[in-house]
Image (tube, rainbow, N blue to C red; front, side):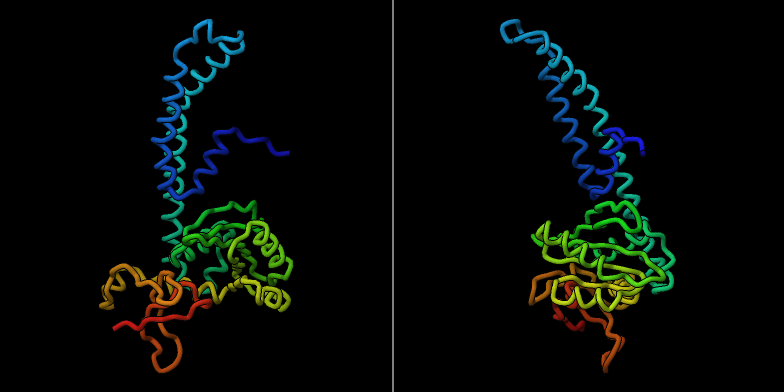
Length: 278
């Protein structure tokens, strides 16, 4: 049996999965709340306010713990912010360095790296990401996505050899129903079974295999310096005229316009609206 973690360790783990800006904002907030409690319970109540010795003891405990935690909690959130920032920076570098290598490089990632890689890919599509912290390579829901009022769930499967079966898709669908989310994604470095594809059809679950993930990363990988070299304006990306989602820069791969860049809706393939450049 594993040893139970302390409260501060658990808080650090949870806070480190939040966006680093959230943890930074919690630093002064936690100090103000604890400071207020410490000052409010600094004086001993008058005898008329006491109902017994237990009240004095509780009063003293609140003052003592608030006085200590007014420094410990901001420090904990500060460490969590640093961990979250470093993790995000590592994910960005990983996408830039590995994404161009295609499916073969993606398949070589560990399951932890794979989850970070997938999260960064969705972040670049305009989603807000919350790490759900799967317990392992076959854990439950790994990421929660949000954009406006819509929420989506993501399950990552870093399986190199076997196909992702229908049981995984059914599991995600059950969680989607329980949490009342708009849709879900199952992402793998490998492929999906025929049964998994049939089950996902019509249930607002998108299956992204290794090739699809590599294409997704390539679509959103263009950085500002590359855009400037290509002579493309680097202002805020346009908003989709059909679904009002943000748009991402893409490159046509087929047809007479192959190689040309265009703005495509980040909700593709649900929304196929596109805007030509130039």
